[in-house]
Image 1 (cartoon, rainbow, N blue to C red):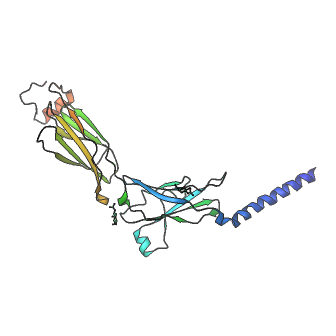
Image 2: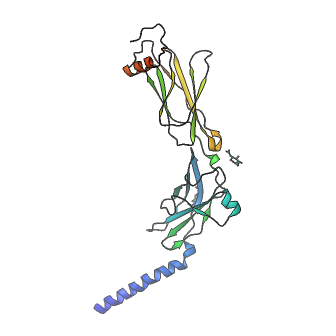
Image 3: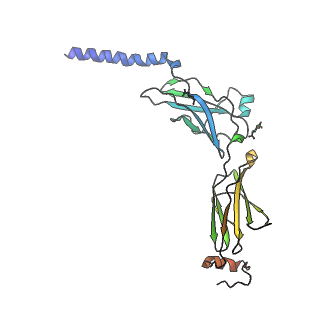
Length: 249
Ligand SMILES: *[C@@H]1O[C@H](CO)[C@@H](O)[C@H](O)[C@H]1NC(C)=O
Ligand SMILES: *[C@@H]1O[C@H](CO)[C@@H](O)[C@H](O)[C@H]1NC(C)=O
């Protein structure tokens, strides 16, 4: 009985000892990740690939990149990606690695314990100037007669061209450049009764491209608009009133 148990554990031990050898023999059997591509929207860049599947095992991936300089002058040098050396999911946010508007080569490989796949390289180098720029989100609010806008915060690379006009025949369009999103900006003081319209698009200096314009949004203050106390204060403080001879309290 005891002998039998020892025998069994010996067999177990041998097979456990042998498994790694078989696997080491099978190094080439760990497939390289396939289908590399970069999704880039509003200067956020994500490298994705088809996952390597080994049942009941957790695969890790390492991502490396080469900027134009490394590609041209030091082709043997690959730089590990900031966030994916290693990583577990089949994607990697490479935004922090792509710091110039030049072509970047990217490659990824899979690892499982001490096993490593071959590298897979992105077919066409990625240039961030191909990023998709979407029209920015915009919130319009009224504070008394003041037209306030808040633009989507897309990070420090984004500037905004805000176009605004009074909706009436022959009205002139004004343009204001806003250097960052996420904070309320006073656009203009509105004329009572008139609709004031706004549309906005982004501009990214680093790639010299702009997005399409957002949808136009219009707001109107009624003739009988009542100031909130703060707005009234602000209006007085500026020492001017658009309300002409109208009685405002
Ligand atoms: C790569 O993508 C194609 C098309 O989306 C798909 O048919 C194929 O299975 C993918 N390859 C791998 C290894 O997942
Ligand atoms: C990006 O830059 C490359 C190299 O300067 C240029 O050939 C390509 O047309 C640019 N693409 C876009 C979308 O601007």
